[in-house]
Image 1 (spheres, rainbow, N blue to C red):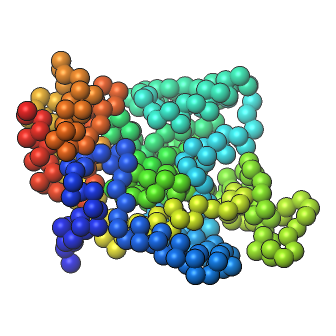
Image 2: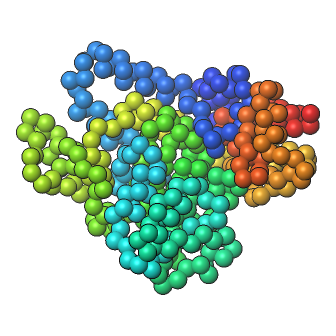
Image 3: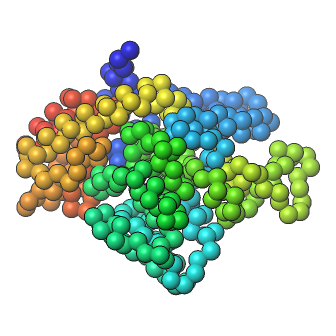
Length: 367
């Protein structure tokens, strides 16, 4: 049955006031997700939090939904406050040797530079390369490749499955940040098979800040110890009346990386947002998003823009003799929200947008 996108749009009140084409910066949270957060606080008021252990059972349901969305094992999913915490865990627990190399793609999000660059003081080399020279940048000393599933500034989408297969063959770990693109594009981890896949949910996954997670490959999970420890590091943490006071016995699942309380309000919101995405279906969502992105692409070309990449939810364009920051600022008083990044005007529609939004962008850019 076809999706009623007008009914879906009604879930996002901000769209009544704004032509919002900036999901790559911050996604809109649906009303049903905010209602889920309200229900959580109402439950706290009613029960005075004495049922707090049950909240963790609800988080296991969220893991199941993530597993369904990404075609991956729910037991390999852990919650963290942001995606950079997952990369920090990986980089902080791998045993580095002088001369080891980390490779990232050109113009990546800063997460993929900062900690790797910090490791230079320990003899680790960070290599940044355009994708056209990616395979030439790899050497026998390359230990890790860290990149995004979709570039935040240009919309570039690397060929994830082909990259992962060849990197596995060479024994190189692949860390992917799926924050840009998840719930707009269909990512199947059973096919991609990275070593780690991290997501911050506040963009395309339409979740509140503080709701983030990562998936970790079984083999890596077995050898990667937690970086932080707390009362939930021990497998017997649910026995709150008799907590272990010695060395923790770690869980076999990825939950061993969760050392304490979780950001329950944000995660309840994420759970409902993912439920919405699953109900709509990723096939329908991806088709909708790419249809709108194609329409945006034509508008930007019509207005003189040179498009970075086609068939991507992040549509970035360079305009000769026009400053993208000034262009974005000029659209704002007209109620049109887009962004400027690295010399490009960046427009990022999601499934809650419609053709009228694209037309308002066309008119706004002509002023």
